[in-house]
Amino acid sequence: MSSSIPSDANRRPNIYTIFACVISSSGALLFGLDVGITGGVLSMPSFLQKFFPAIYEQQQNDMSTNSYCSYDSQLLSLFTSSFFLAGMISSLPASWLTEKHGRKASMGVGAIFYMLGSTLNVTAVDTPMLIVGRLILGLGCGFANQSVPIFLAELPPPKSRGALQTCFQIFVNIGILLAGII
Image (cartoon, rainbow, N blue to C red):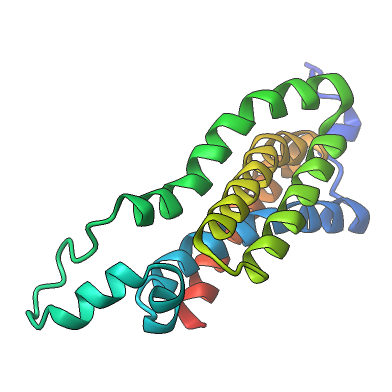
């Protein structure tokens, strides 16, 4: 009885394939960093004082030790959720771009959005600029989160697809861990 799996399906991935999978998963590292850092930065008094002064004042005046729901701000909620909302919405055009022009094109667009959003967030002078930067970062996240897992599922030989597919999730978790350490 002969196997129906082609002989090249059992080959091991070469160094180029492993390198490509690790590099393409680096967007997941950025996603994990963003998820982890957002929570930490919201507890920094200097950040709140610059971008959310009303919340900073409220926090300074409230001497209770209960930190549950200590932030009651629509603007702060917009800051936090804008990243995820933009990511969710951008995954729709990302799927079209991925199908029409390939996975690499979609990952490239995601990388450009990541760079633009990061630049805006680092140079932000006010809250609207910060939120726009988060929206653009979310666009990059949507493109990367849509195309990278497909790329990782198709690039390696069938025998090692599962192992290399986990690179994406591992990098998300490494990013969250690094954000917690920072």
